[in-house]
Length: 151
Image (cartoon, rainbow, N blue to C red; front, top):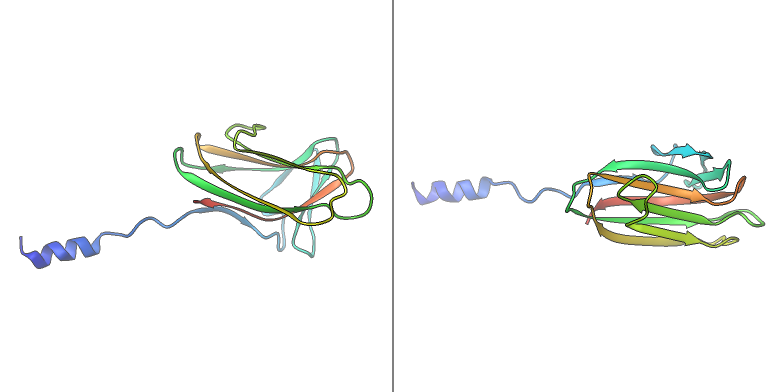
């Protein structure tokens, strides 16, 4: 085979697969695919997802297909708004529904400033389960800029 043909074959091979973003939730006009369980979901003009608990530990959730063995990154912002005790926020990220084997973060009451977090993890199952929890009945938390993508 001529050398030029070999060079063309090498050049024609695709580069690495682009990174996949599972979610990039800016909450600009909807709840971005999240569903409520014992919670009422809303989005605000400030582009945040509101999770108001209808019972203790009400939550918003979304599940994602992932590839076992592949590394991912999650990043997010969380804030409590309004006066008085609003109830703590909790983010659970797990390999089964309700689990928190990848991430289990809690934030304290009455914190009206943005908190942010991020985590790199390697998927062990084909589905990723994300819950955004408000721990106290009738109280609320707001979430923003939730991004899950290949690391």
